[in-house]
Figure 1 (tube, helix red, strand yellow):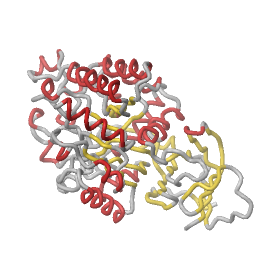
Figure 2 (cartoon, one colour):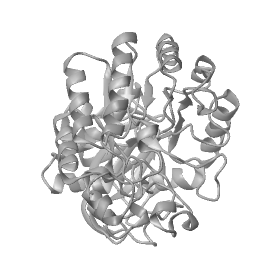
Figure 3 (tube, helix red, strand yellow):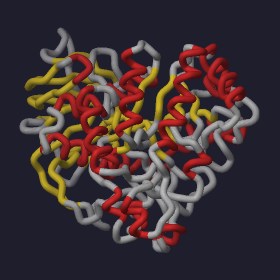
Figure 4 (cartoon, helix red, strand yellow):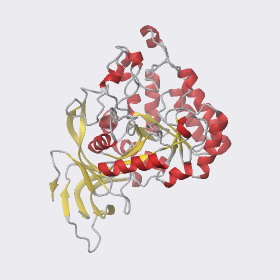
Length: 432
Protein backbone atom coordinates (compact mmCIF):
# COMPACT_ATOMS: atom_id res chain seq x y z
CA UNK A 1 0.00 0.00 0.00
CA UNK A 2 1.18 3.52 -0.74
CA UNK A 3 -0.69 5.50 1.93
CA UNK A 4 -0.93 4.35 5.53
CA UNK A 5 -1.97 6.12 8.73
CA UNK A 6 -1.05 4.86 12.19
CA UNK A 7 -3.28 6.36 14.85
CA UNK A 8 -3.20 6.90 18.61
CA UNK A 9 0.33 5.63 19.31
CA UNK A 10 2.77 7.17 21.75
CA UNK A 11 5.18 8.48 19.15
CA UNK A 12 8.75 8.82 20.40
CA UNK A 13 11.21 10.42 17.99
CA UNK A 14 14.35 11.38 19.92
CA UNK A 15 15.85 13.23 16.94
CA UNK A 16 13.07 15.83 17.10
CA UNK A 17 12.43 15.44 20.85
CA UNK A 18 8.83 14.44 20.09
CA UNK A 19 7.15 12.29 22.75
CA UNK A 20 3.37 12.15 22.87
CA UNK A 21 0.20 10.56 21.56
CA UNK A 22 0.06 11.30 17.87
CA UNK A 23 -0.87 10.03 14.43
CA UNK A 24 1.69 9.34 11.73
CA UNK A 25 0.92 9.46 8.02
CA UNK A 26 2.93 7.61 5.38
CA UNK A 27 2.90 8.11 1.62
CA UNK A 28 5.06 6.28 -0.94
CA UNK A 29 7.37 4.83 1.69
CA UNK A 30 8.13 8.10 3.46
CA UNK A 31 6.79 9.97 6.44
CA UNK A 32 4.30 12.52 5.14
CA UNK A 33 3.23 14.15 8.39
CA UNK A 34 3.11 13.74 12.16
CA UNK A 35 -0.11 14.83 13.85
CA UNK A 36 -3.05 16.02 11.72
CA UNK A 37 -3.20 14.70 8.15
CA UNK A 38 -2.38 17.15 5.37
CA UNK A 39 -5.27 18.55 3.40
CA UNK A 40 -6.47 16.16 0.73
CA UNK A 41 -4.65 13.14 2.18
CA UNK A 42 -6.68 9.93 2.18
CA UNK A 43 -5.01 6.76 3.54
CA UNK A 44 -5.53 3.38 1.93
CA UNK A 45 -5.32 1.75 5.35
CA UNK A 46 -5.43 2.89 8.97
CA UNK A 47 -3.99 1.06 11.97
CA UNK A 48 -5.08 1.72 15.55
CA UNK A 49 -1.94 1.58 17.70
CA UNK A 50 -3.54 2.60 21.00
CA UNK A 51 -1.36 1.54 23.92
CA UNK A 52 1.69 0.97 21.71
CA UNK A 53 4.88 2.95 21.24
CA UNK A 54 5.70 4.10 17.72
CA UNK A 55 9.42 4.70 17.29
CA UNK A 56 12.02 4.79 14.50
CA UNK A 57 13.36 1.44 13.37
CA UNK A 58 16.62 0.53 15.08
CA UNK A 59 19.99 1.09 13.41
CA UNK A 60 22.66 -1.49 14.27
CA UNK A 61 26.27 -0.47 13.59
CA UNK A 62 27.78 -3.90 14.16
CA UNK A 63 26.54 -7.10 12.54
CA UNK A 64 28.39 -10.03 11.00
CA UNK A 65 25.85 -11.58 8.64
CA UNK A 66 28.25 -14.40 7.61
CA UNK A 67 27.29 -14.22 3.94
CA UNK A 68 29.17 -14.51 1.67
CA UNK A 69 31.50 -17.26 2.84
CA UNK A 70 30.04 -18.73 6.03
CA UNK A 71 26.46 -19.57 5.13
CA UNK A 72 26.57 -22.59 7.47
CA UNK A 73 26.50 -20.07 10.34
CA UNK A 74 23.87 -17.67 8.96
CA UNK A 75 22.72 -15.91 5.80
CA UNK A 76 21.73 -12.40 4.90
CA UNK A 77 18.12 -13.56 4.56
CA UNK A 78 18.01 -15.30 7.95
CA UNK A 79 19.62 -12.44 9.87
CA UNK A 80 17.69 -9.69 8.10
CA UNK A 81 14.50 -11.49 9.10
CA UNK A 82 15.73 -11.79 12.70
CA UNK A 83 16.55 -8.10 12.68
CA UNK A 84 13.06 -7.21 11.44
CA UNK A 85 11.52 -9.28 14.25
CA UNK A 86 13.63 -7.28 16.71
CA UNK A 87 12.57 -3.89 15.34
CA UNK A 88 15.87 -3.32 13.51
CA UNK A 89 15.43 -1.77 10.07
CA UNK A 90 19.06 -0.91 9.20
CA UNK A 91 21.99 -3.33 9.59
CA UNK A 92 25.58 -2.27 8.99
CA UNK A 93 27.33 -5.40 7.73
CA UNK A 94 30.96 -6.07 8.62
CA UNK A 95 33.43 -6.26 5.70
CA UNK A 96 34.98 -9.41 7.23
CA UNK A 97 33.28 -11.72 4.75
CA UNK A 98 34.75 -14.33 2.43
CA UNK A 99 35.66 -12.82 0.03
CA UNK A 100 36.36 -9.60 1.92
CA UNK A 101 34.11 -6.64 1.08
CA UNK A 102 36.89 -4.77 -0.69
CA UNK A 103 35.51 -4.62 -4.25
CA UNK A 104 32.34 -3.30 -5.83
CA UNK A 105 31.46 -6.84 -6.90
CA UNK A 106 31.16 -8.02 -3.29
CA UNK A 107 29.26 -4.88 -2.31
CA UNK A 108 26.78 -5.48 -5.13
CA UNK A 109 26.42 -9.14 -4.16
CA UNK A 110 25.51 -8.22 -0.59
CA UNK A 111 23.04 -5.51 -1.59
CA UNK A 112 21.43 -7.82 -4.17
CA UNK A 113 20.97 -10.62 -1.62
CA UNK A 114 19.50 -8.10 0.82
CA UNK A 115 17.01 -6.85 -1.78
CA UNK A 116 15.99 -10.42 -2.53
CA UNK A 117 15.39 -11.07 1.19
CA UNK A 118 12.98 -8.09 1.35
CA UNK A 119 13.59 -7.67 5.07
CA UNK A 120 15.71 -5.16 6.98
CA UNK A 121 17.96 -2.81 5.02
CA UNK A 122 21.53 -4.12 4.86
CA UNK A 123 24.27 -1.48 4.54
CA UNK A 124 27.65 -3.01 3.65
CA UNK A 125 30.73 -1.43 5.21
CA UNK A 126 33.77 -1.22 2.95
CA UNK A 127 37.11 -2.70 3.93
CA UNK A 128 39.72 -0.12 4.88
CA UNK A 129 42.51 -2.10 3.21
CA UNK A 130 42.62 -4.81 0.57
CA UNK A 131 41.73 -8.15 2.04
CA UNK A 132 41.79 -6.46 5.47
CA UNK A 133 45.50 -7.26 5.40
CA UNK A 134 46.60 -3.77 6.40
CA UNK A 135 49.05 -3.44 3.53
CA UNK A 136 47.35 -1.73 0.57
CA UNK A 137 44.47 0.73 0.53
CA UNK A 138 41.13 -0.52 -0.73
CA UNK A 139 39.22 1.20 -3.54
CA UNK A 140 37.16 3.35 -1.21
CA UNK A 141 35.83 5.74 -3.84
CA UNK A 142 34.49 2.92 -6.00
CA UNK A 143 32.84 1.19 -3.06
CA UNK A 144 31.27 4.45 -1.93
CA UNK A 145 29.77 4.70 -5.39
CA UNK A 146 28.41 1.17 -4.99
CA UNK A 147 26.59 2.10 -1.78
CA UNK A 148 29.03 1.89 1.14
CA UNK A 149 28.63 4.70 3.66
CA UNK A 150 31.76 4.05 5.73
CA UNK A 151 35.01 2.10 5.79
CA UNK A 152 36.00 -0.34 8.51
CA UNK A 153 38.92 -2.46 9.66
CA UNK A 154 36.46 -5.32 10.19
CA UNK A 155 37.88 -6.08 13.61
CA UNK A 156 41.36 -6.60 12.14
CA UNK A 157 43.48 -3.58 13.14
CA UNK A 158 45.96 -2.10 10.68
CA UNK A 159 49.36 -2.70 12.25
CA UNK A 160 51.39 -0.46 9.94
CA UNK A 161 50.84 3.08 11.24
CA UNK A 162 51.87 4.72 7.97
CA UNK A 163 49.35 2.64 6.01
CA UNK A 164 46.69 3.55 8.56
CA UNK A 165 47.49 7.24 8.23
CA UNK A 166 47.24 7.07 4.43
CA UNK A 167 43.95 5.16 4.70
CA UNK A 168 42.53 7.81 7.02
CA UNK A 169 43.61 10.57 4.65
CA UNK A 170 42.08 8.78 1.65
CA UNK A 171 38.79 8.14 3.48
CA UNK A 172 38.65 11.80 4.47
CA UNK A 173 38.89 12.90 0.84
CA UNK A 174 35.81 10.76 0.16
CA UNK A 175 33.97 12.07 3.25
CA UNK A 176 33.73 8.54 4.60
CA UNK A 177 33.60 7.84 8.36
CA UNK A 178 36.26 5.36 9.49
CA UNK A 179 35.28 2.55 11.88
CA UNK A 180 38.26 1.29 13.87
CA UNK A 181 38.59 -1.49 16.43
CA UNK A 182 40.63 -0.24 19.41
CA UNK A 183 42.77 -3.28 20.12
CA UNK A 184 46.50 -3.91 20.04
CA UNK A 185 46.82 -7.32 18.35
CA UNK A 186 50.10 -8.08 20.11
CA UNK A 187 48.66 -7.49 23.59
CA UNK A 188 45.48 -9.43 22.84
CA UNK A 189 46.88 -12.39 20.90
CA UNK A 190 45.94 -15.83 22.16
CA UNK A 191 43.19 -14.97 24.62
CA UNK A 192 39.49 -14.12 24.73
CA UNK A 193 39.22 -13.16 28.39
CA UNK A 194 39.96 -10.10 30.52
CA UNK A 195 43.27 -10.16 32.38
CA UNK A 196 42.47 -10.13 36.09
CA UNK A 197 41.92 -12.25 39.15
CA UNK A 198 39.19 -14.32 37.46
CA UNK A 199 41.46 -15.28 34.56
CA UNK A 200 44.18 -16.17 37.09
CA UNK A 201 41.79 -18.37 39.06
CA UNK A 202 40.58 -20.09 35.89
CA UNK A 203 44.10 -20.57 34.59
CA UNK A 204 43.37 -18.67 31.36
CA UNK A 205 45.57 -16.14 29.60
CA UNK A 206 44.11 -12.64 29.76
CA UNK A 207 43.81 -9.52 27.64
CA UNK A 208 44.84 -6.39 29.58
CA UNK A 209 42.97 -3.10 29.38
CA UNK A 210 46.14 -1.71 27.80
CA UNK A 211 45.26 -3.64 24.65
CA UNK A 212 42.41 -1.18 24.18
CA UNK A 213 43.99 1.99 25.52
CA UNK A 214 47.27 1.61 23.63
CA UNK A 215 45.36 1.29 20.38
CA UNK A 216 43.13 4.26 21.25
CA UNK A 217 46.16 6.44 21.97
CA UNK A 218 47.64 5.55 18.57
CA UNK A 219 44.39 6.23 16.75
CA UNK A 220 43.76 9.52 18.55
CA UNK A 221 47.25 10.75 17.62
CA UNK A 222 46.43 10.08 13.95
CA UNK A 223 43.02 11.74 14.23
CA UNK A 224 44.71 14.84 15.64
CA UNK A 225 47.20 14.75 12.78
CA UNK A 226 44.77 14.10 9.90
CA UNK A 227 41.43 15.46 11.09
CA UNK A 228 39.78 12.24 9.93
CA UNK A 229 36.29 11.37 11.20
CA UNK A 230 36.79 8.19 13.25
CA UNK A 231 34.34 5.98 15.10
CA UNK A 232 35.65 3.57 17.72
CA UNK A 233 33.84 0.24 17.73
CA UNK A 234 32.97 -1.78 20.84
CA UNK A 235 34.61 -0.01 23.77
CA UNK A 236 35.08 -2.33 26.74
CA UNK A 237 36.89 -0.43 29.49
CA UNK A 238 36.48 2.50 31.85
CA UNK A 239 39.84 3.88 30.76
CA UNK A 240 38.87 3.64 27.10
CA UNK A 241 35.62 5.52 27.70
CA UNK A 242 37.53 8.22 29.58
CA UNK A 243 40.00 8.64 26.70
CA UNK A 244 37.13 9.12 24.25
CA UNK A 245 35.48 11.61 26.63
CA UNK A 246 38.62 13.73 26.81
CA UNK A 247 39.16 13.56 23.05
CA UNK A 248 35.62 14.80 22.42
CA UNK A 249 36.09 17.59 24.95
CA UNK A 250 39.18 18.64 23.02
CA UNK A 251 37.11 18.83 19.84
CA UNK A 252 38.42 15.80 17.99
CA UNK A 253 35.91 14.35 15.46
CA UNK A 254 35.53 10.99 17.18
CA UNK A 255 32.61 8.88 18.38
CA UNK A 256 32.19 5.48 19.98
CA UNK A 257 29.78 2.61 20.50
CA UNK A 258 29.49 -0.28 22.92
CA UNK A 259 28.19 -3.81 22.46
CA UNK A 260 25.09 -4.27 24.56
CA UNK A 261 26.40 -7.38 26.33
CA UNK A 262 29.20 -5.26 27.82
CA UNK A 263 26.54 -3.33 29.76
CA UNK A 264 25.19 -6.44 31.48
CA UNK A 265 27.92 -9.09 31.72
CA UNK A 266 31.36 -9.10 33.34
CA UNK A 267 34.36 -11.39 33.68
CA UNK A 268 32.45 -13.20 36.43
CA UNK A 269 30.12 -14.64 33.79
CA UNK A 270 33.08 -16.57 32.37
CA UNK A 271 33.60 -18.34 35.72
CA UNK A 272 31.88 -21.51 34.51
CA UNK A 273 33.92 -21.52 31.28
CA UNK A 274 30.74 -20.56 29.40
CA UNK A 275 31.79 -20.40 25.74
CA UNK A 276 28.84 -18.10 25.01
CA UNK A 277 30.74 -15.50 27.06
CA UNK A 278 33.79 -15.86 24.84
CA UNK A 279 33.77 -12.46 23.11
CA UNK A 280 36.18 -9.89 21.72
CA UNK A 281 36.79 -7.45 23.25
CA UNK A 282 36.47 -9.54 26.41
CA UNK A 283 33.99 -9.05 29.21
CA UNK A 284 35.80 -6.94 31.77
CA UNK A 285 35.35 -6.09 35.44
CA UNK A 286 32.42 -4.61 37.34
CA UNK A 287 34.01 -1.13 37.43
CA UNK A 288 34.45 -1.19 33.65
CA UNK A 289 30.82 -2.20 33.13
CA UNK A 290 29.58 0.60 35.37
CA UNK A 291 31.80 3.16 33.63
CA UNK A 292 30.51 2.08 30.23
CA UNK A 293 26.95 2.41 31.49
CA UNK A 294 27.61 5.96 32.68
CA UNK A 295 29.29 6.80 29.38
CA UNK A 296 26.15 5.68 27.54
CA UNK A 297 23.98 7.71 29.89
CA UNK A 298 25.94 10.95 29.51
CA UNK A 299 26.41 10.63 25.73
CA UNK A 300 30.15 9.96 25.57
CA UNK A 301 29.12 6.69 23.93
CA UNK A 302 26.50 7.74 21.39
CA UNK A 303 25.46 4.33 20.11
CA UNK A 304 24.65 0.85 21.40
CA UNK A 305 25.07 -2.04 18.97
CA UNK A 306 24.42 -5.77 18.98
CA UNK A 307 27.92 -6.84 17.85
CA UNK A 308 25.99 -9.69 16.25
CA UNK A 309 28.15 -12.74 15.52
CA UNK A 310 26.05 -15.87 14.92
CA UNK A 311 27.78 -19.25 15.13
CA UNK A 312 26.92 -22.84 14.34
CA UNK A 313 26.77 -25.18 17.38
CA UNK A 314 30.15 -26.76 16.59
CA UNK A 315 31.84 -23.37 17.04
CA UNK A 316 30.55 -22.92 20.58
CA UNK A 317 29.98 -26.39 22.04
CA UNK A 318 33.69 -26.77 22.71
CA UNK A 319 36.06 -25.77 25.54
CA UNK A 320 36.19 -22.03 26.21
CA UNK A 321 39.71 -21.55 24.88
CA UNK A 322 38.90 -23.12 21.50
CA UNK A 323 35.43 -21.60 21.01
CA UNK A 324 34.99 -18.94 18.35
CA UNK A 325 34.28 -15.53 19.91
CA UNK A 326 30.97 -13.76 19.57
CA UNK A 327 27.34 -13.50 20.66
CA UNK A 328 24.21 -13.67 18.54
CA UNK A 329 22.74 -10.31 19.49
CA UNK A 330 19.99 -9.22 17.09
CA UNK A 331 17.17 -10.81 19.08
CA UNK A 332 18.11 -9.00 22.29
CA UNK A 333 19.24 -5.55 21.08
CA UNK A 334 15.95 -3.81 21.78
CA UNK A 335 15.02 -5.98 24.76
CA UNK A 336 18.25 -5.30 26.64
CA UNK A 337 18.09 -1.60 25.75
CA UNK A 338 14.64 -1.48 27.34
CA UNK A 339 16.09 -3.19 30.41
CA UNK A 340 18.42 -0.21 30.84
CA UNK A 341 15.22 1.84 31.17
CA UNK A 342 13.80 -0.60 33.72
CA UNK A 343 17.01 -0.26 35.71
CA UNK A 344 16.68 3.55 35.58
CA UNK A 345 19.98 4.09 33.84
CA UNK A 346 18.27 5.80 30.89
CA UNK A 347 14.87 7.30 30.27
CA UNK A 348 12.96 5.78 27.36
CA UNK A 349 13.62 8.54 24.75
CA UNK A 350 17.37 8.48 25.52
CA UNK A 351 17.49 4.69 25.28
CA UNK A 352 15.72 4.81 21.92
CA UNK A 353 18.13 7.52 20.75
CA UNK A 354 21.14 5.28 21.43
CA UNK A 355 19.83 2.64 19.01
CA UNK A 356 18.24 4.92 16.38
CA UNK A 357 19.30 8.53 15.78
CA UNK A 358 22.61 8.06 17.61
CA UNK A 359 24.08 5.38 15.33
CA UNK A 360 22.42 6.87 12.25
CA UNK A 361 24.03 10.24 12.92
CA UNK A 362 27.48 8.68 13.22
CA UNK A 363 27.28 7.40 9.64
CA UNK A 364 25.14 10.23 8.26
CA UNK A 365 22.24 7.92 7.46
CA UNK A 366 18.73 9.18 6.70
CA UNK A 367 17.36 6.73 9.25
CA UNK A 368 16.55 6.62 12.94
CA UNK A 369 14.06 9.50 12.86
CA UNK A 370 10.43 10.13 11.95
CA UNK A 371 10.16 13.55 10.38
CA UNK A 372 8.37 14.50 7.11
CA UNK A 373 10.42 13.27 4.18
CA UNK A 374 12.28 10.61 6.15
CA UNK A 375 12.00 6.93 5.15
CA UNK A 376 9.08 5.32 6.96
CA UNK A 377 11.29 2.85 8.85
CA UNK A 378 9.53 2.29 12.13
CA UNK A 379 8.74 -0.08 14.94
CA UNK A 380 5.54 -0.56 16.93
CA UNK A 381 6.35 -1.76 20.44
CA UNK A 382 4.20 -3.21 23.21
CA UNK A 383 6.47 -1.94 25.95
CA UNK A 384 4.88 -3.87 28.85
CA UNK A 385 4.50 -7.26 27.15
CA UNK A 386 6.67 -10.00 28.70
CA UNK A 387 8.51 -12.71 26.79
CA UNK A 388 11.33 -15.18 27.26
CA UNK A 389 14.37 -15.79 25.05
CA UNK A 390 14.51 -19.47 24.18
CA UNK A 391 14.94 -21.76 21.18
CA UNK A 392 11.38 -21.02 20.05
CA UNK A 393 11.46 -17.22 20.31
CA UNK A 394 14.99 -16.68 18.97
CA UNK A 395 14.92 -15.78 15.27
CA UNK A 396 18.62 -15.60 14.40
CA UNK A 397 20.17 -18.67 12.82
CA UNK A 398 22.85 -18.48 15.53
CA UNK A 399 21.69 -19.62 18.96
CA UNK A 400 24.89 -18.60 20.76
CA UNK A 401 23.52 -16.24 23.40
CA UNK A 402 24.38 -16.05 27.11
CA UNK A 403 20.94 -14.47 27.59
CA UNK A 404 19.10 -17.69 26.74
CA UNK A 405 16.39 -18.20 29.34
CA UNK A 406 16.24 -14.51 30.35
CA UNK A 407 12.81 -12.93 30.69
CA UNK A 408 12.26 -9.55 29.05
CA UNK A 409 9.56 -6.90 28.90
CA UNK A 410 8.74 -5.23 25.59
CA UNK A 411 7.78 -7.06 22.41
CA UNK A 412 7.86 -5.78 18.83
CA UNK A 413 4.37 -5.96 17.37
CA UNK A 414 5.18 -4.64 13.90
CA UNK A 415 8.19 -3.43 11.91
CA UNK A 416 7.93 -1.38 8.72
CA UNK A 417 10.63 -0.60 6.16
CA UNK A 418 9.81 2.31 3.87
CA UNK A 419 6.17 1.90 4.79
CA UNK A 420 6.10 -1.83 4.02
CA UNK A 421 5.39 -4.33 6.80
CA UNK A 422 8.39 -6.65 7.16
CA UNK A 423 7.43 -8.20 10.48
CA UNK A 424 4.14 -8.63 12.27
CA UNK A 425 3.65 -10.49 15.55
CA UNK A 426 0.69 -12.86 15.96
CA UNK A 427 -1.01 -10.22 18.10
CA UNK A 428 -1.73 -7.97 15.15
CA UNK A 429 -2.31 -4.25 15.33
CA UNK A 430 -6.00 -3.61 14.85
CA UNK A 431 -7.28 -1.75 11.78
CA UNK A 432 -8.70 1.61 12.77
